[in-house]
Image (cartoon, rainbow, N blue to C red; front, side, top):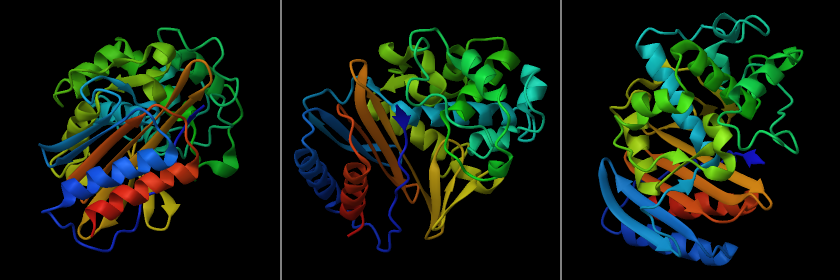
Length: 317
């Protein structure tokens, strides 16, 4: 399965700069030991500056599977198309693809509030789609061919299909493969050089199939969600679905306002026995400190929450 957890602490203190690096490194190593992860990497940045890497059994400069962190690449790619005037946030899937229910907007797809469901990518729903060049067209036709869950329209309901539909729309509108277009529109300008399709899931790029180094994902996060980024520089301009507790799902990331700035974060899991068994986590605190983690194991939500708590606690003394 490709899943995402919704954590993120409501942090109440101010970062202590001098020893943040040491504390984060120690917290990550302690967490790795506690959850019995044999291979993991963390990169810690402040702004556009690398502070430290912590690598356990893997190279932090090597590409690692991103799982649901891939959605941010798709979401930001869509944002560049909106900014350039190719689309508006009210453009619908039916207008672009020529099929499916009317009224499913880009805004709703980005925030998982389209009413599409249930998520056919869970369980056995991806059989036969893993190794296609792209599964977006098949998943989009499947999702848009069902009756909408009208009681869920306008409300957050996490579903990988939303981002598969966006991937299909990108291809239809640009006439290019999703990965070719979004690499040029997003990853190249962000300075990312290691991004590629993760071979076991190469057809699922739009919502779970990218891989890149943790350092490169940190560069992308700063380019897109930093204070001068396409999303982070004008957060109010982009849609967000209420998750409760002050948290919202925005453009491929969960976000929360904090001390005049914003925290952004997302988890990802790949739990496909015999095919993919890995996880990832990214977090940006106050659009300043930023960490990206990749690990070779499918963990449970309590273990993921412990990572979130450990790193946040290390940054905010």
